[in-house]
Every structure is written in structure tokens, then in C-alpha cells.
Amino acid sequence: MRLYVIGGDGQVARSLREAAALQPDIVYGYGARPLVDLQDPSSLENAIGNFKPDLVINPAAYTAVDKAEAEPDQAFAINRDGARSIARITAKLGIPIIQLSTDYVFDGNKQGAYVESDPVAPQGIYGRSKLEGEIAVGQANPKHIVLRTSWVYAPFGSNFVRTMLRLSAERDRLRVVDDQHGCPTYAPDIANAILAIGRIWGDSGWNSRFAGVTHLAGPEVMTWCDFARAIIAGAALHGGRTIPVDPITTSEYPTPASRPLNSQLSTARLNSLFGVHLPPVKTSLGDCLDRLLRQEA
Ligand SMILES: NC(=O)c1ccc[n+]([C@@H]2O[C@H](COP(=O)([O-])OP(=O)(O)OC[C@H]3O[C@@H](n4cnc5c(N)ncnc54)[C@H](OP(=O)(O)O)[C@@H]3O)[C@@H](O)[C@H]2O)c1
Image 1: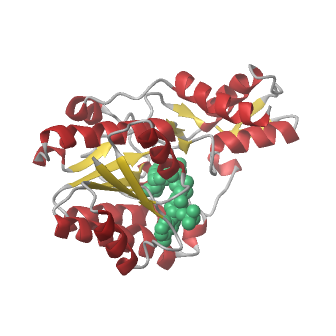
Image 2: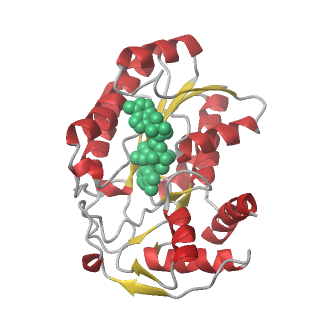
């Protein structure tokens, strides 16, 4: 199977590269800035055309949720127009695209887990640009899978786990938002899930039932404060400091972009359609902390 991925060192892109390296029958190619840029359709066309993939995966995105409020043109150019360009190119080649998207397409007012058919109502520019990217991909290539994920973390890149480890080394107590609920999702788990999904159609061919949106998120719902406490407790097993984490409300931690209070994603479709189940947070966070704290040791 020949896979081509847009993005070099993003959390999901790098995890895909690492996971694919362990599967000898996957021929992996990727394009990253400055050579391959979502804002430059011809760079995408050349890179994808030259590689001749069976499948293209797009985890690259404008992901700065707060900064997007001040840079909407940039966010839409990358998240909507860039995604549309890849979908058009793959459609011309007759191959499928997997597009990554986000829980921030929802307003967070639902009680319980969001399913794929729930109404969308993004609260900020980032969520709107990703939603318009989902729609553009669906319109441009019938062979598309949009995977909405949430609260992504990895042993590298910019994420909540690394921020909490840094802050817990600098401060004697932390104050963390305790009224936003979501599902932390480990980027290497996302990568393994994507490869498993790709393998299904690699083995049996594209099936139109695959098309559309599927939620791909960790199996446990928690608040940022719960997650921070799990990170501090996990780091303590590696000799990290144990410090108190105090719960605060979203209104006590104002940000330029508002975030959904509930972004729990149901993975029932992922489980039944693709037979993919993500590991519990204890396993994935444990692996992340092992990798991070071994690096520091
Ligand atoms: N992070 C989260 O918590 C989260 C939550 C829900 C959904 N998602 C979605 O999941 C996907 C993967 O997220 P992630 O956490 O892996 O993102 P990330 O770590 O922020 O990486 C984003 C990647 O996109 C690349 N990129 C940005 N603009 C580009 C452009 N114009 N052309 C080519 N590449 C460009 C960046 O490249 P450079 O290295 O050149 O900057 C970077 O490698 C994204 O679609 C995101 O919207 C993420």
C-alpha cells in the first residue's frame, strides 16, 4: 500500500510516519512546508502525482485555535481551501482521501456523546474553517473519510500533556479548567487507527459505506482538570513532583476563542464500521509519559 501524508512533524503526521515504519508493506511518502504547502495547489498536485499513492491522508491544518480568531483568512485558506485542493487531486486520480477534523465543529451544548449525525455549530473560526474543510472534501471526492478527533496529545509537538509537565516543574500548584468535557486522544493511537482503516480498503477495495464522517477519539471522557491530575500522577511514577491541581471554570480562564463545554465523541461508528477500538487513556498516557520522561532522564 502506498500512502502519502501531508504534514511532516505535526503530532498526527509524525505518528503516522512512525507507525508506518513498523509495517514493511507500507510505502510511505509525505510532503511538508516549504516544498508542499496546503496554500499552493500546484505543490500538492506535483507531490501527489509523482508519488502515485493508493491513499492520501491529510492531518495538516491550521491548528492555532485562539490565533485563528485574528487570522481567519489564513485558517480558511489552509483548513478549507487546502483540504479541497487535496480532495480534487485525489478525485482526479480516483483514490480515496482521509481528512482529519475536530470536535470543535460542535457547540458543546449536548448532554452526552456527540454522534456523527448531530447538528454542527462551531463556536470559532478554527471550528468553522475545519467544518468547511469537511464539506469541501465531501463535495470534491466521493471516496472520502473525515475523521473527527479531539484533545490530541503525543510525546512531541505542542499539547496539553507537555504543557502540564512543564508547568508542574515550574509551579507549586496548578489551576485547570474543570467544566469542559472531552476525550483525550493519543496521536499514535490515531495513526494506528488510520492505518487499520486504510488496510481495510487496501484488502477489500473502497466501499461507499466508508464515505462521510466518523468520530475517532479516546474511549474516556474527562475534564482538563481530570486529565491534568492523571498526567501529574503518571509523571510521579517516573519521579515527577506531585502538586495539587485546583479546578477552575472556563470563565476564570478566558481565551480569545470559545470552546465547547462538552465535546465528547461517540466512537460507535468507528467500532462497528471499521472494527477499530482505541486503548484506554491509562495505557496511552502511560506510553506517552514513558517516552517523554525517558527522553528527559
Ligand atoms: N491538536 C488537537 O488537539 C486536535 C484536536 C482535534 C482535531 N485535531 C485535528 O487533527 C489534525 C492533526 O492535528 P495535530 O495535532 O497533528 O496538528 P499539529 O501538531 O498542530 O500539526 C499541524 C501540521 O500541519 C502543518 N501545516 C500547517 N499549515 C500547513 C500548510 N499550509 N501546508 C502544509 N502543512 C501545513 C504544520 O506544518 P509546519 O510544521 O510547517 O507548521 C504541522 O506539521 C488536524 O487536522 C487538526 O485540525 C487536532
